[in-house]
Length: 167
Image (tube, rainbow, N blue to C red; front, top):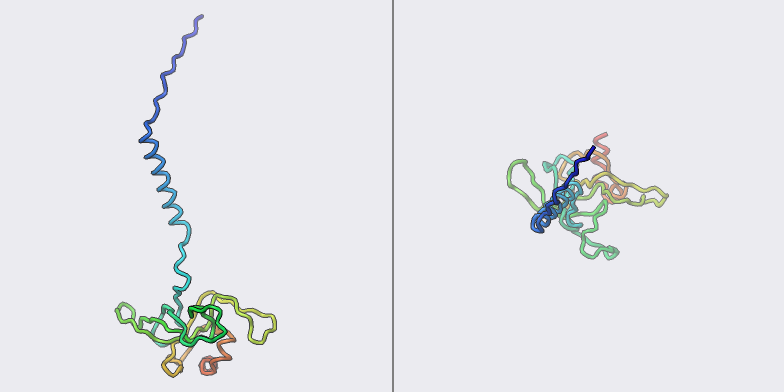
């Protein structure tokens, strides 16, 4: 019995241009995957906050501290802590393009804060929450919803009064 000899056809090589095109397509697909799957960070100082009172605004963009203390380690005024007065941009009515520069007080912050009595407790909240204030630093809204950091309550007794009225 004779075995038939198999002859293999010579392998065709892909041209270099096709290989480069294929490698480029794989690189683009990988970059798109990384762009979609990895959350992108905004600039460290751009921060949005939820408004926790009934002043009419629902979300604000925090700009800068109104009053900076000498003890601030962050010299650009964007190190926000509970109790600080911040200049912000608020959109008062949804669907309209009426944005106003206003003031607000930070009620909670996602950064860990040591308790003001230095008893070893730390507070940390899920997001930054603010309450709108006027030029005399009086709260604009008549009610405040949600938690408030103890450091803020010690510094702003008017906010504490609004919380007591709610209970």
